[in-house]
Image (cartoon, rainbow, N blue to C red; front, side, top):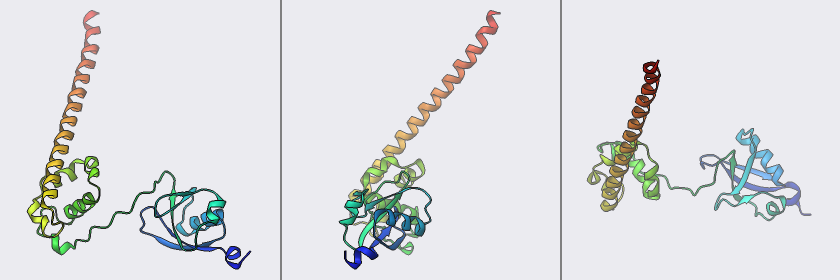
Length: 191
């Protein structure tokens, strides 16, 4: 056995948000998880994955094959690995004149990385997007005005569909209340 096996190997550890990074030297997977829990202040069980692709490291044999300084991610509870999304690098000075300001620019920046998330947005974010002026964002965020126009149109559509669904649910609730009232009144009429 060489000295690196006795003393352990160094690893670069991050949390699921990739906001915290710590260095840990460990000679086994169980050693690593106990040290990480201590450093990150986790009480729960944790799982260890490769930061680059989310491959779970769940046995000592695989752990032993890892190179020193491998980037690892710690997941606790039901957290799942996800690819890193680049931050939106727009200064607040650039977006002060935009309706929606930094919030809108940040939202557009995130959606540019994964447009599928537009369907998961709530009404306030969808309203912000559907009210945006693509011309005011095109110079400072993205040179792609067509993307911004399509994002605005898609947001308007999703917002409309959400409102229609809410209206339909409200009608069903009112119908159910009316039915319940009528059932309560009918037995009184029979007696």
